[in-house]
Length: 262
Image (tube, rainbow, N blue to C red; front, side, top):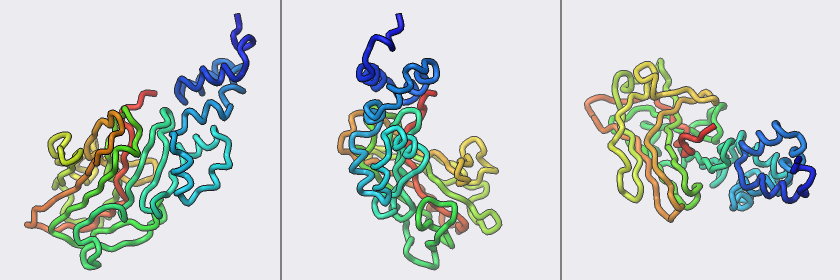
């Protein structure tokens, strides 16, 4: 019995909306008769975050609300939108629809970040943000960021990633040297400090090139159980003042779901 001929499209859409975006796309591929139901706004409205309208209205991309829900979903999963006056970005994880954020360099607390002799702010053509931070010269490296768990997807294991570049011909203090990376929830460290070199030649298993041609390294992970109003803090630190550091370019810290199954 072909249930797609018996059940009205509204019922099929309701059933599909109780699955996942990945399952919905598979259903349309396996059973072309379901394609109309799969493509309906009723399905993709369920896959979008409940507060997606508010997020988009507060962005520089409010015209996206005129798109159909499926088109909007896939746009948000492949094109980050800027929020918080261009200091943060928002995106959806494509397979699950879970929320991803990036704190741009301007949203971070950078010790001596406003002292031109130590840090400079500049535009970078391959960055999603208007400005990135370039390290000119410091002995004490200390960068922090934070995000509220209530804006993240609940019941989700998240990881934080430092997104950066090294100006290799002008870099000092990072080759064969490590920095400390931490993730804290309300002041409680989720794991021991991670010591990692930011130079991919030292740590190719940890420092990876992204599709956008920036580099990233995982800072740590945390589980956002119920989306309670907690604060997650991220830190990059190296306070060994016996040598100076230069040549690090920071785009931001990305917070995205980890270990999403295919």
